[in-house]
Image (tube, rainbow, N blue to C red; front, top):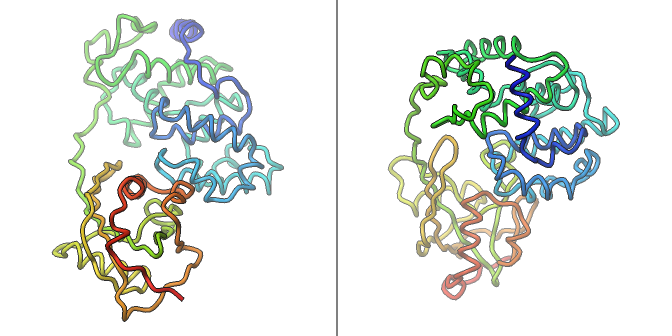
Length: 363
């Protein structure tokens, strides 16, 4: 029997992961949010630090968003952290600090969609549901030799239907996690180790020799390149940083003033325009610093930073909630996106601009 063979293998080969040493729904929830579109090896150190700092929903709810984002820095997809924080506050206010077990209540929490609700239902609350993440989609697709795109609704519905036909009642937690581990360790995206697979005799794709062709997916388009600029403004060895709007890319994180270039703009012109729009300042763009780049999920980003100074005729700038003057060493204390952190590291390592641009006069 397929489920018997799979669960016997899982008992001997399951990965030793910290969230598998607890039945606490909060701990499992945090792990599931972190694991969205992120590899287990990447998540592990973040999870340990996060749980040490926020061991309960109440501890997370009582933190500031900046504290949460700082611990999340580098893990990416920062909306996950903001939603986790807001959801923890709702859980404390409405559910006495405990994750609600009912699916209709889970679905109403920020950041909890179909997959996370199913994962919590199966792993934390023992409901007979499938949590269709990447590994499960791949394993079930191959198991039934399914030639549908698993990312499309039709493919997902069929994967879910077929998966439930082989899930043993009352064993959803083990079954889901066994399929996750099988997909991570054996039924991998490329060159699956079918000779080591405990359910190879049940696998139709293995029998038909189609396992390496599945899951079926349309080719991805090349990632577009988005070019941006950033201004390094300083006053008395303090740097000007701004907080990004919460609704936008990298929302709630701190960084250097700047933004994306529109067609036909030169870098200095784009930077002058963006800083005027963001802060109301007229600046002189002095000299370029080393260019930086990073690849996000949906685009490639190229950042050109410049040392800049405020025009003497421009208005003065005071600190406010989304604008801050900080020392170079204080940049480590604020949450930043990847490119801004790379720029901050460059400034910490090599700050010759301090001696070049005159200080900004501020009232």
